[in-house]
Image (tube, one colour):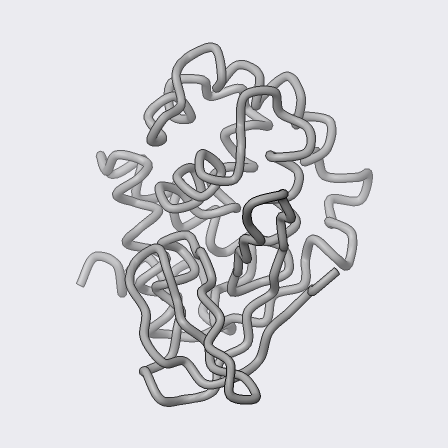
Length: 201
């Protein structure tokens, strides 16, 4: 199993990246939330990967963080009706922090707004993943889920900042996108207050 790829980023679009390694160019399917974190073309990049092997194809999926990759795996392995393409669409619409929060709170309406996801599939997401995204007693995720190799803000700050923007009247997907951009600009140590101020500036 190929769990990561590290090489030169040749080019990228919102849903694909070409990474050159040892003379080979690898096409990697990525969600928009990972594309936002990519460096400039011509520089080194590392993506955490999941490979799907089929008789007629070998498809490589890449993510900016281990947590993102693991959430992708959760969806395609445990939710009936969600394949890799649908999972990428969901993760392109909302960050993992927002998706986990929606699943924990049973926010079917928000999940159903993701591309290719209707109400029934959104309900399955909640039913089949809720127990897997619940915070253990003590309030902390396990180390694998919490690991982030990107410049994203800590999960709690990210989630709290999104909630604050929603309270101010933002739609959740718009709040999520604004806080993601603020986190990229401010770095991993940014507080909830700093993220909100940056998003509103």
